[in-house]
Length: 88
Image 1 (cartoon, helix red, strand yellow):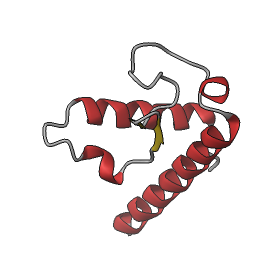
Image 2 (cartoon, rainbow, N blue to C red; image 1 turned 30 degrees about the horizontal axis):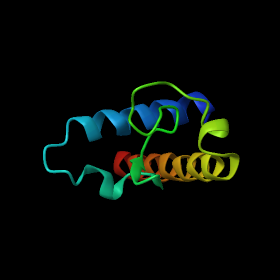
Image 3 (cartoon, helix red, strand yellow; image 1 turned 180 degrees about the vertical axis):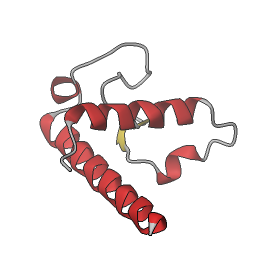
Image 4 (spheres, rainbow, N blue to C red; image 1 turned 180 degrees about the horizontal axis):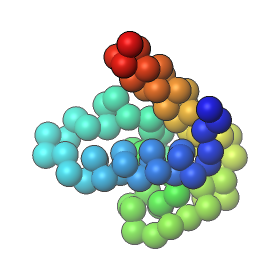
């Protein structure tokens, strides 16, 4: 099953939500992320301060954004495979 860009965006929003609700400060350790100007970016569709929506390809750059998207796709595929194994 192909993973759409909408699924990648939803994954990023879920990560951001988890980061906002983390009281320990360690939630981002296992997240797909990158550093930008001293900030940990877990949803590149938002600016580094999570104050406004941005076009990640323009704001953070094509290379950074494509790397993020590819890593999210790998993570989703991995998670699906694990879920599939548990259903057996």
